Image 1 (tube, rainbow, N blue to C red):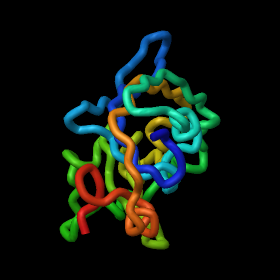
Image 2: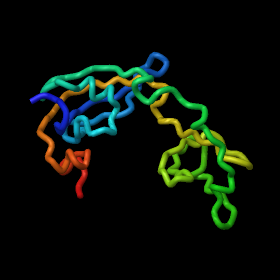
Image 3: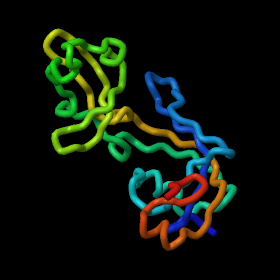
Image 4: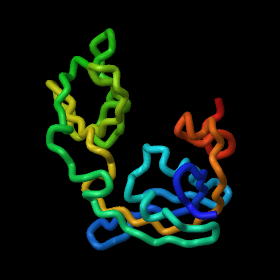
Length: 170
């Protein structure tokens, strides 16, 4: 069986990025805790799936995805200043352990969309946050092994994700 549309795929891999000539490990999955996904189900980088298409169980892979095919370049408009009042509790206090430079904070926009933002500055007037993807501006490298491939169930295909072990439980 090969990796193709509507197959459930299990892989182990290391994801690294090159920062100033040094490979930095970003994520690692293990054989006993693989990454399991529905091929063609959406939600993954198209270039990630394209590099795996046609592989078989036991095949290894080593490919890079350039920034423009991954999470793209940083966008200046995703860096915003939010009035400090938005972060104050009912007594007018700021939680300085939570709202500090370098922390990722869960936020909700005016339309109710949830997102993560990186605090990049805090002052008396505002909190500056970067809502770019953490891997924006990065070329990605995946090195790994295909562990398992199986047919997706009708429910998995209609829901667009894997059920059971390694997937959703509902």
